[in-house]
Image 1 (tube, helix red, strand yellow):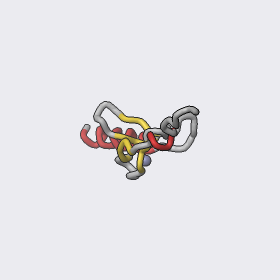
Image 2 (cartoon, protein in one colour):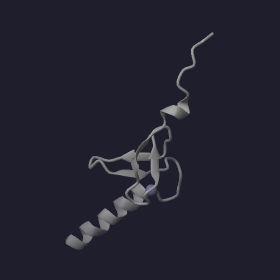
Image 3 (cartoon, rainbow, N blue to C red):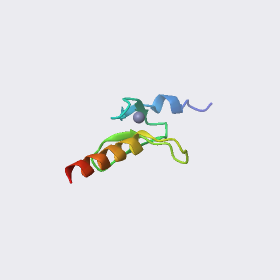
Length: 68
Ligand SMILES: [Zn+2]
């Protein structure tokens, strides 16, 4: 009989939270990214909807414009 190994669900852990919508980001789920500043965001690859990462980039852009 084969010894029971870890099921995938047991390996799930929370990697962090999206800084925009505070959604839990799980290790076994895609759909999120971490940037160079170690901030985490939802990101929907291949979808035309604005992801939290897109929103963050847009806010950053607005701020830069205001500073100039
Ligand atoms: Zn989000």
